[in-house]
Amino acid sequence: MIDELADGEARNLLTIGQLADYAGVTIKAVRHYHERDLLPEPSRDGSGYRRYGARHAVQLIKIKTLAEAGVPLARVRELLAADPAAFTEAIGEVERDVRDHIDRLHRTLDRIARLRAGDRLFVSEQVADYLDRLRALGVGERTVHLERDLWIMMQALSPQTADGWLTDKLDALDDPQFQDIYRDYDAAYGWSPDDPRLPELARRSRRWYDSRQPTAEAGLDSDPEIVALAAAAAAAASPAWARLGQLTQQADGPL
Image (tube, rainbow, N blue to C red; front, top):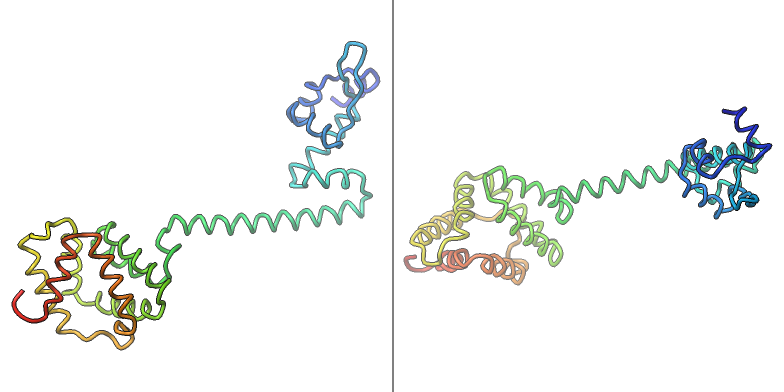
């Protein structure tokens, strides 16, 4: 092939398509390198065609090799004209730039992985672990998402209340009776507000709360507005839950 190119140099017999084939690039790439003033563009012959020789092919292969190695086209001209020492130094800089780019890509992949994780992108690791515990208990994804939204709101508006609430919720999840109540609440999401099962569920819930003191870190009374806002958001999601909240709060008299 070198001999063929050498013959072509004397007569400039290579078309742009042949040149591109020799170098393993597209014609569009050759023209782009012309535009970037990286590859000399021969004048047209008497037939109106541009003809390329061996020096064009060699130069094009050098450009392609550097570009595939990650060298920005803006630096290719510098490297092509550099002496060996300057070339080695410049290649070292390019290598460092490529490694930095790879590191940025890895960080981007990490962010994408967190996006796939969903919960962990928006809430703390501790809350995300709590939500995973709900899933493990059989709580439906709809209810888990509603809880997640409440945690997002609480962590933004009152981090201290959120931290205390989380401590209390994690402690409660260790109680099998609370687990049963939570699963029943999840099932009640789509019930009618007049469903006859609601009063009994409310009674069970109230008995459980009455028999238990929140953990010292819970701090549920520290920000009643946040607590009320969370309760209102849950009630708005389900009319049955709204009714359960009313029944559970009726501390005096039969439910």
